[in-house]
Length: 449
Length: 183
Image (cartoon, rainbow over all chains, first blue to last red; front, side, top):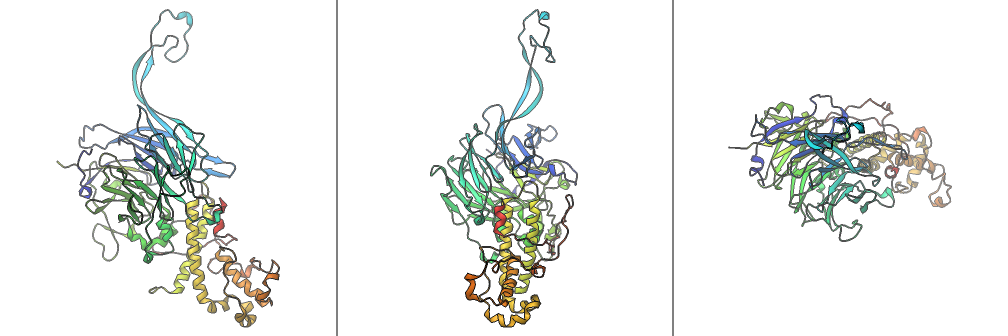
């Protein structure tokens, strides 16, 4: 349940925190590559290009700012993946974390899957706040006592110690992907998960690392005939037999694992016919889907392509039910964006907890929210200039032509090196995490009254 | 098309081809290996650009032919009417350079006296699409070579709105579709 009924884009957003270096000189290893809340929202994980995972934990209460419910502090940091070298192909395998997905909590420990291009790892994060004291045979420092000096028997007791959070790799799922992994998704059965690369999707059991089942294979017999690749994949939130995968051609296929072992033949194909007036050299690139996410209720899915966000009703394949333009003013700049490589940027998107608002990133450290209920949208900016505690964010506007009003920014002044590719929304509250290149911003909505 | 002429489209297509080729070359050295998705998108853009380039070139062919082939102008006048239909790709896909030079190659072959009916008995070398020499090697849409970047150097991003020409490296016989099987 929500702490406050969401009012969509009437909502005002306040700055809460920013994590990361203040330096303008960004170390490549610090570039954030994925952001994910766990299922309760208490933990927030980030992965970076250097292969590290940083987990933040929500504080219960801040005495100085009681209305600040979104204070997150570092809980655990660990090196998930290291760079590797494939000697057979003479290729370096990057340690960059492509995706993190949390498992639903089953016991005191937390589990997450993190993946780079080739290997998925299951990490256990556990707390230790007690240690044993008073061994019979050992000294405090672990050395064994001289047996002749032991004259009495005592039972070790557990005494409190400073909280220690340990991360340990419990499973390593390797050597199953020839191409670069773009997605992992945990099944609602909590036993299996899928991993997807450019051409194949594999199904794993979380307990078994030496075997996986291939469930989708779109590799053509002759690679010269390749026309599309898989760009993202996700399991349905409550139907454990259903998953979707999106393609570089702008289509989404929904598959039912009960239908056959190999789900190359889709159950549903979601595709919107192209608008012929928008045809250009770059039509194919901008129609490539960079992210697909089911709504929490499982009735809709959202896709992100270069210029827009689309909401699809799972019961209707021939067109999306809603389309939101993220930065339509870029359509006339596609040639420049091709030259500076920005056209290849892969933006993600996310739903809020009750599926009424969707969010995605853009350039100039702008991010956009679309309120589906009230048909409103807002552009906000993640910037250190608006970073006083609980400072309300002012909506931003891009001027697309003609006279630029005060406070508007013209398209040509946008900084295309400042891009927000990864955003996440707390599952139960109006708290959002927005990643700029190397900083993580946390915002919360302003509670009235 | 509104104010955009076929010539503008041709220039645009040439530039996009050159940019795409440099990107393809650059992607071979990037960390993590060739990215299949990116390579596929590059090849799709290149194919669109190449198709536009050739269709707009064909419409300009009578004008463009003379300045491009100074050595053949004498025999050209008679051969023009004997030319077979415009060259289509001998293979499913050919790169822009090969297509451009094969047009000039076929014209040189024709001027050697080869008749169209005798194609079956032509020795393989006759139908070879290999370039005849430096004169016909560089297609006109490619600007001169420029230095390969050393590791650590970088090109700065093109400022928005100023689609400047990016010099590409000279082409090797890299078929568009053969980019993909490199995996």
